[in-house]
Image 1 (cartoon, rainbow, N blue to C red):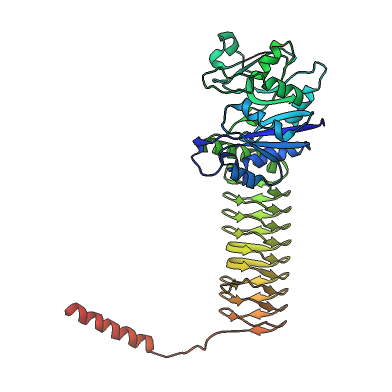
Image 2 (cartoon, rainbow, N blue to C red; image 1 turned 90 degrees about the vertical axis):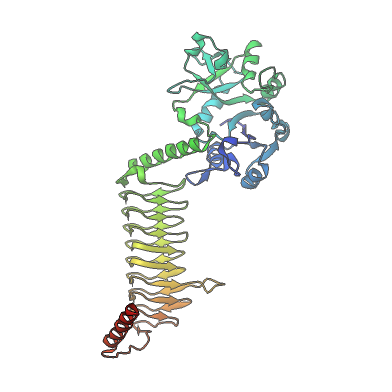
Length: 452
């Protein structure tokens, strides 16, 4: 891979998003759109990354941290002007420059690499443009090029002839150029247009007028260069990403009963022979091992589901949850920062928070680990093969020993030894006939009220 720098343009105000959040920070599959693009750029190991910021710069700079340099475009006078702002941060960098847009998040590393490689071919183009062929070319600018990708002309739709409009190769706006060529050409771009702005694509026509070659590389997937400017387009991008992820999961050996209802996060890991029923949502940090089953309406985030496990229906695994091989959580069970040991079960209506459950333990319906005292979190430890009866409250910090039994309806606040039975209930009081006398008395009172 050639020595290159990446410039990412993200200075736009994003007014069509109607949001206080910077446009490129809106998430797709749980990750900001600019981070999707940054990951693709990073796959090629750039020497430098510069993000051009404008409105909402504080949000962007905080989100980026030290992952990229930033520079300010103020005022905003077009894409050519935006790229010029990166010249200062890049200093004397003399390699190739790749120009991306922060709201075009799905450009693949292979496409970026193809642009840089075309820049280094024998005809030494002054600039390489990324083109695409959409189903409907609409009013996109056209790239007029020969069979070898040498550009004869770049033309905006409104300025194109009927013959030029019949060309379906469109300009994505993404480019690659040598630094020395880029800065020299940008210095010659004017703003004699209706918007009074300096447009980046003008460098191509300037170079061609000088007798220099310019080239186009075409992507085979128009969705790769789709820009996101509104909530509707954000939803379309999410749908596009989810469709690809679902197809990938199934190609890798998972069964999705109703694929269109399953939603993955950007880093979801799904093993082979996993079955996922309808309406399952994966948040960031979720992984599912081979042979597991995720039943309908379950939500899994920051959790690991082990080999052969069963989850749901209507289960929620929160961050820090680990289900070891063969364990099971059933309907309306919630786990948080808890480990369910091999073969252990919590079949229904249970909360396991800040807990460790040993192998083959059984957690009865309605059991909760009381992990929070209003100030601090405390941990519950349940030993192997322990049996926790229904409707029990385990008040942390507390340990339940191996093979111990906690009787149903118990509120346990002290450790239970191995093999011990612990029953914590109030004394049952029986008063024969009391209920009959109570009902008779109340019925007479009610009847007297009606007469009155």
